[in-house]
Image (tube, rainbow, N blue to C red; front, side, top):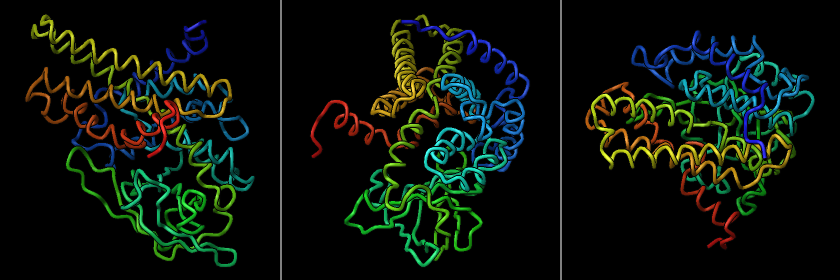
Length: 381
């Protein structure tokens, strides 16, 4: 087997790194005390993704007819790795290009594709994800937001929570129940919701750790035309299952963790702490977890490159990334002590990221349940 990167992918990575060295410098997203949920971050991301789009690097893996570059899955993932090493300067755009766009390409009507895909490919819009609810976060099959058919429209009422970037989003990839509660996952549909639709209200959720990025979204008698439905009515679960397989590995957070680990090693070496065998062992374990996450993610990308249907391997990869991020975050505290909690320091950023690692993109515990049921074959209790 050949495990090396192709010459084309290696050349692309080199060109991309040169570009990022010019456009994304230092701790760009924390330079003035603001960050992921801030207006400064959003403004930077909008300008930055425009430059990526001009070079054909925002959606390199999309078909050319939808504004993409027609490249393979590996080039797309080279892009993702290098972006996450820099703190993800695309902001919420990684959701647009990783799974919102592909879902529309797979299930959308011609009109939806023509209207919604080009703005994503040009970097002109932000999307958010309307999945979690106060009583249906990890258990999406229990969601209660309801869409009722009224002639040529759906009337939607309900609430979403922990909705990242909703305060800046132009559209929401929204799940709502169109069947009965008893239907469970078989009564869910996907809607492509413009966030400026009357009846949509966004409320900020202040964050105890880190900057603001979460919001609540309240939907009160929101009217959407039937044309806003993605795929067929009551088939949303099928769309979401496929979509989440892309989301699970869409953010290669191990790349950022590995880079932080290198920085921690330099910090420890300068202070003579890396000579301690116990510290060496901690660094070795953290490095092994980062590498394990990378290899498991690559298995998922290999499936995608071979145009196979998404498999449960994505859940393994997601769980491994959580373990890697937590290991590096814990190591930062152990090695740096109180200095790891100094605002905007290397340890501070990683520690705060690791706290949310097991929640974003599906909770860690749910991934383990899915692994036990779908990969190890354990019966569902």
